[in-house]
Image (tube, rainbow, N blue to C red; front, top):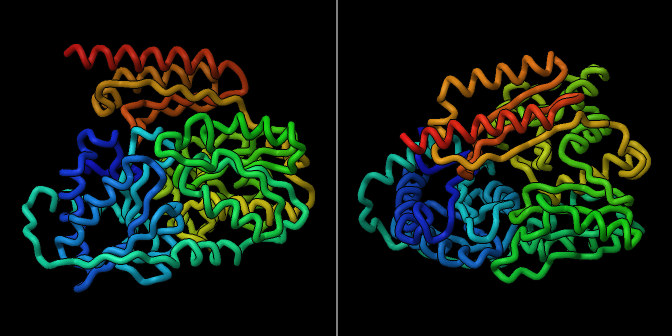
Length: 437
């Protein structure tokens, strides 16, 4: 069991445990000690997003790593998947990113990638947590550098997968995040006419009313300005939501469906949150569908287990395993546009191709996720909810990997909202009872 690492690294509110400079320094020491067991002279690539706390946490992490004799190469502000790509391309020992992805600016986080460009496996994170319990005196004076070619190399990688976008009018919602510079450059170089929105980060506006979790403004801009489509990225650039010329939202399930058809995939890996309509539509075409736990690391595990190459989440976090080791919002956008070219038509023409079942997702803040999830009365409530749907829907209740939240999802042809609301109330009551004990 990991205490600090969740499904996407260490997360929390910056300046509060565990994301204090003191803890991050110790985390850097522990990680540095671990990387020294992997390589005699480790090199770690280090990037960040645009949060005001990222500089402080970056400095603390770098100091911890360097105290263990690690060479740290600063990449500056760069999307998370860019770090994954460069870690593998440059044969670095590891990559590290200071980011909290789609969370508000108050939050931040730290995630590590191994030399293959994949997130560190659970066992490696567990070993780093074990090393956190030990003292790590200075074992060498590590050095530091600024790798100024990082953005150019990542841009070249993306352009190698870009279709010709000449004549296409694209709106980009850059979430005031890590894609704010590279996003417009990429689509302009691919030939598109670009209108950039939410591209002036000030340290506190990342994801605020914008980005992949709030694409409403982009939907309005695309429809009002007569753009061909819109692309909304999240704070660290590993996911994307698409908007058609009428302002209608496409999400990850649509992307998976289009890509599977266009690229001749044998099947798709989704998650327990993937819409049932995707599963039905793929199976009608003779394509396999598998569900993994929520989190891109678990999607990747299932892809390897099944031998498939395409998987992802409704959030727009999609892995094209033939091209990259992790979800990449910019790459996903390019390959979706390539899929549309192969299939014919634009996003609006494909909007009705996958009518989704109504899905209700409620986030319930709780005092103790583990205690509520372990309560047998919660399992009983879930079984009762499933029985009410009579086999014509799904229920999923799971803890967030990054927040003190339990997510209640109900998906059904009808009655989803009522069942979800009642189940959320049961979760809330169990949480209040657990807190009172």
